[in-house]
Structure formats: C-alpha cells, structure tokens
Length: 349
Ligand SMILES: *Cc1c(COP(=O)(O)O)cnc(C)c1O
Image (cartoon, rainbow, N blue to C red; front, side, top):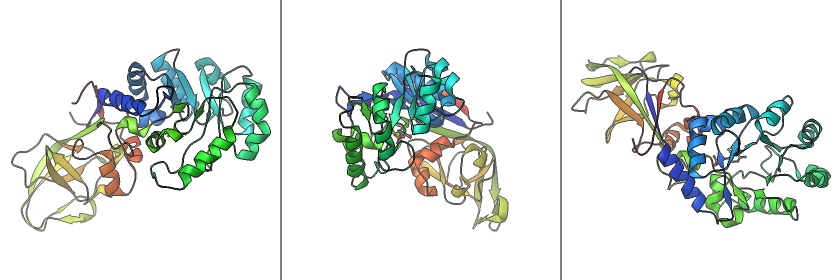
C-alpha cells in the first residue's frame, strides 16, 4: 500500500463519550460536536458510533455539515447548527430537520420569516465576541424569542482549557444573568467546561475534542493511529544531505528511510528536522525538510527495516505533535489528509 494508514478506534471514541457523559449529573444531557467532518475523522462513522453509544443530540458548524450527518443518522437525532440560519439555508434546514442556533437579530428575523414554526435555538455571547447575541441585542428580542419556545439557549467559553482563568467565572455569571427565568434548557460547556465542574453543566454539554482523545480531556482513550509506509531505504556517508534545501547533513554513516507522507497529508513542514516517527517503542528522527509527499527518517539505530513508521499512536498523540509544532491538537486532527486509507476498528488496533 502506497498511502498512509489512518486507523480510528470507534470503541475508544464511544468510551470517551461515555466517560464525559458520566462526569455530569443524570439530568444533564451529553451531546456530541462533530463539526469539520467529525474533527477530521469522518462525521458519518463518528455520528453513527456515538448514536449507538447513546448520544441523541449532535452539533455541526454549518448546515451543509448537518446534511451529511442527517444522511448518516436518519430521522430522529437532533442536529443543531452553531452557525445558525444563514441566507439560502431555509430549504436545507427545513428538509433535513436541522436546528439553527440563531446568533443575531438578523438571523432571528430570517428564521421567523422563512420557517415560522421550525425549531431553533439561541446562541448568546457571554464574552468571547465570536458568535451569539450580545446582552443588549438579546434584551431587545428576548420576549419574542421566548414566546416561540427555543429548544436551547447556549453560549461558549473562551478559556475553559485553563481552569484557573478569571474568564470562566465571568462568562458563567454573564450567562446566568442573560438566561435568568427563561425556562429554556441551557448549555455552556464544551469539553473544557465539563471538566470545570457541575456549575458549568446546566442542562446539556457539548463535548468535541475530548471525544477524539485529545486535551483538555487528559483521561481520554486514544482514538487515532497513523502509520506511514516506507518506500525506500538508503545508506549515507558523512557529508551527504537529505531533502530540499540540504537542511540536514549526515555526520557519519546513516541509514535513511523515505516514508510516503508529507505536508499534503497534514504532516506539517514545522516537523522538518524536529519531529519523530516511532518504530514500536523506538523514536526515529525526521531528517531534512518535510516534502509534499515524502519525509526522510533516520533509522540508523534500528535493527530491522520497518515496512511502515508510526506518526500517531500510543507514544505520540496529536497533542504531542501540536506541542512540537506550536499549535493545538484540534488543528493536527482537522488537517489529517484525504489520501490516507482509513480504517475504522472496534477495539484497539
Ligand atoms: C467546537 C465547539 C464545541 C466543542 O468544543 P471542544 O473544545 O472541542 O469540546 C462546543 N461548542 C461550540 C460553540 C463550539 O464551537
């Protein structure tokens, strides 16, 4: 096989949903956020697995993503759209039974005009200044909105991955004030918010990243494995270089494997001369620049010649790669390439 192999452990995914669900009281519902194609892992498989595990409510970023999830799940489960009701979406929202989280007076007006009896939710801005109605805007339409019985009122935390951050209690307070005496189910917490404790749970939580096995859910089970095949191996002597720009020079006899993956597969160039692959438990450094489709790896210290090397697995998670390259696990996950042969497993691969 010429392409990398991405293995997704669906049992681990389901187990992560159950563990996050278990962190909240029994009267708190646990939804699942599967935007960006299930954080890059395949929204259809992710949705079906989590529905089988017990999830009844799903969130996506935009209506188009909701269409794919509806196709995977069929009628029944609730699919809500963080981006709300955008111009041109009415037909899709109606036909597929999507629930837009209305983010502004404009969206509220659009929704009430186009689909007067269709369910909706409200997203409030409690301080992040990204999506949702601001307090004054909300005050202006609150009575009209509540009369139409929203399914949910939600907001989102900016700093929930930092438990000690002042922004968390500030946003909590703002959310409580804006939602007092609405009588509508409330939601504030994503993965980070669940871990902040019961004050943040309200009626519904919306975990995303924790399901996929990454921080801030430190106790998560590993979901993603990525192995890249070795195409060719060569022996270098001192002074020879590897890859574009001659950025790495052998300081002695070296055995270099060329693996079949690169930045076009989401393996960022920032790993050039700094990242590692693994052969079993043994780290093997990336040498030279990461190319579009190829990477040089130093395997001098290995006794055998591996058929493939592991980029993501028990010794290196998306968070480890993110730490090496100055980003977050979310970005590593959602950049995973489209060329990989994907296999979905039940139980550890
Ligand atoms: C992405 C997102 C989530 C899920 O966040 P995680 O940190 O991945 O758990 C929840 N709510 C909103 C509004 C989001 O945009």
